[in-house]
Length: 428
Image (tube, rainbow, N blue to C red; front, side, top):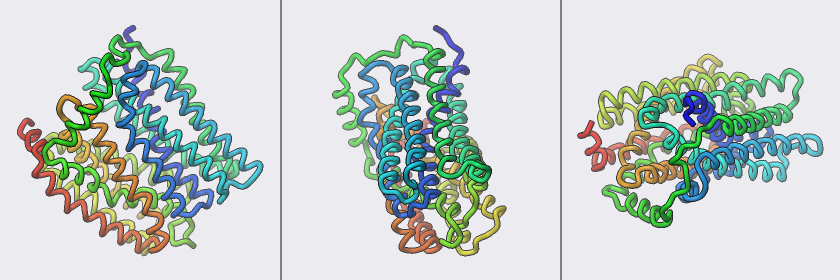
């Protein structure tokens, strides 16, 4: 069956984009709103990165068993069940206990998010694999930008507009935490609708079938080829440390923006957070991605990496200023938008770097390995950030995070001595 990709590519990547932002960002906001400590939130939600670290190990299973189409439909259905279960869990505890600072609620809800993280990582593998099978090479090139835009739209909706709506509901008759139950329940219904829609609309490509060769051999060869390539130590250090400062900030920043001023935070409303961080901020990331991609295509990686690294690191000082001066809302919005724009630029450099070093027979597996290492580089600092912030306070924590983020400048020179980068630049 031939089907117009416009009928399913946007919805597939909307569905792929929501879980990551819900599990890794909105969960932090939810627990913060329920009164859990920054140290507790960052330590345990940091573990939610683990499935994205490990997905390289079970991606061969998705190839070896059944079809990508069935995997993604099953993952969308499972995500619906997880989100509806989390919504029901919040309602149950709201009726029988207070979920605020309740240990059993925290454990059970965290388990739900953790299961959702494994489902989301599997959905990533299946959706991206299906994309390569369902579209012709020409269509893949055309829709690569479209899929990225809809993935980012999902992130804007999830951490921006819907979070803002949650805050609005709390102020207009839907008490917390029922507003969060409604948030997660609505997304659960969305995923149920996606599964039903995609079951009806997705074509069945002839190439979408179980792999005929042993995956054990492919797994061994792909890992062996990746970790024996030249300059592997420099490659690993660059991927792990390039975002180190941003990893320290990622889970603390939403808490700093939302928690009350009496705790040294800014105490902005949920609606304003959704507008500033989730909408303007993510919009700035998209703009940075677009400009960064154009600059990299025009000037190449080696000419862009230093200014992009500066754009990633220096705006971290904005949080020191905000913690020290507690500026007005317009200043906060401006600084966060600028910081996110710089991050959007810098992330394109890392994406291109990973593409350059993910070559050879097992290019797709190498890309999965690289992104898994990148997720590990985010997981460990984010788990430590809450303990650091609790010990130092917001202003001193942001100073320390800024100084630590300067490690990015120390590892940038490594990229100039990696053979894969040299070869890619010569072939441009």
